[in-house]
Image 1 (cartoon, rainbow, N blue to C red):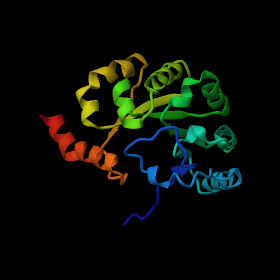
Image 2: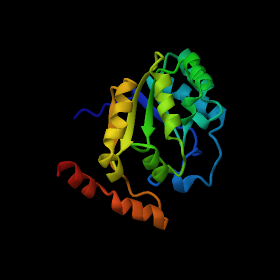
Image 3: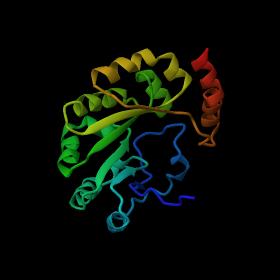
Length: 209
C-alpha cells in the first residue's frame, strides 16, 4: 500500500474576518473571534511548509484580503520559491491599487468566489450590494498576468439566472469555474430556511430536469 503524502500544496486559514455575511459560510459562527493570525505565527507556518517540501500555499479566510499582512506573506513565500494563491470574494480587488500590491508581492493565482448570478442574487445571499465590485475585480484581473478563475455555490437563483453571470465570466476571460453545493452551516432561522430551499437534492433535480 502506498502511504506517501502529497505535500505539494498547503491551505492556511489566516483569519475569520469577512466583509460579507453569506448564509452558507463555514466561518460564520466563528466570527466572534475576530483576531487575525499573528504575523510571526504565519511566517513560522510558511517556513514549516518550505521545510516540508510544499510548493504552493493557498491563503484562505474568512476573507484573506482583509488580513493586514497578506502582501508581506506573499512576498515571503516568493523569497522561498513557494507559489501562492488566494481564495477571495473579490471585493477588495476592485481597488486597482490593492490588486497592484498583490501583483508586486508576487501572487501567482486567484480564485474569486462569486456569491450570486446578478446584483439581486448577490444581495440576497450576502446582505451587501457588492456585485459590481466583483465584476470590476474580474475586469481588472483580465489585464494582469495573475492566473485566475471563479467558483460558485449552486443555488436555485443562480441556476435560474445563470444567463446573467455567464456573459460576465466570458467577457473577462474566466476559463476555470468551480461549482459546489451548500453545506449545513448557520443555525439561525433565515439560514436554515435558505439551506432547505437550496439543498443539493433540489439543486440536482433542477439541473437535470
